[in-house]
Image (cartoon, rainbow, N blue to C red; front, side, top):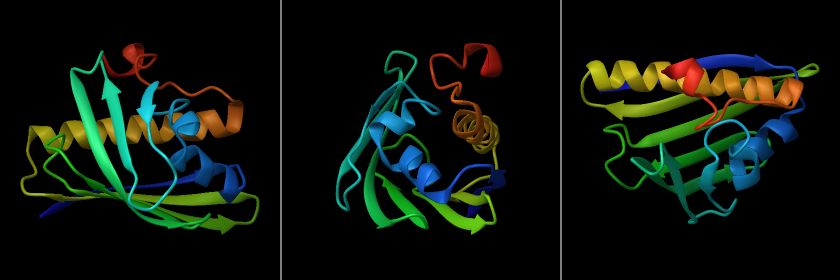
Length: 144
């Protein structure tokens, strides 16, 4: 199995990063404008891209305020089934260790998902540091 992993430092309080990852309003600012999720264990989330031509559905499996978020992918959006956001306070910054685990092959789909997650995690950083991210569909210039 293959895992996508990214590590970024965000100049923002850990609580703000956690809120941007766990709430629909937060996710709409950096990942996709078409987001529905509640910050509750067991909640279902749905994220649409490109007019719902691509839809990812998740179930919230773990919420540890300001430290960890874990989702289980509940449809066939990706072959990788586990998405984790681990947060650590580092002075005035937050270190985010992201993982999307369980891809059976390191193929073109894996490469595409790796690139897109990197782009969107940098969008999360921009949103938290400047107030403006580049969520789908605003990402059209960045991902083509």
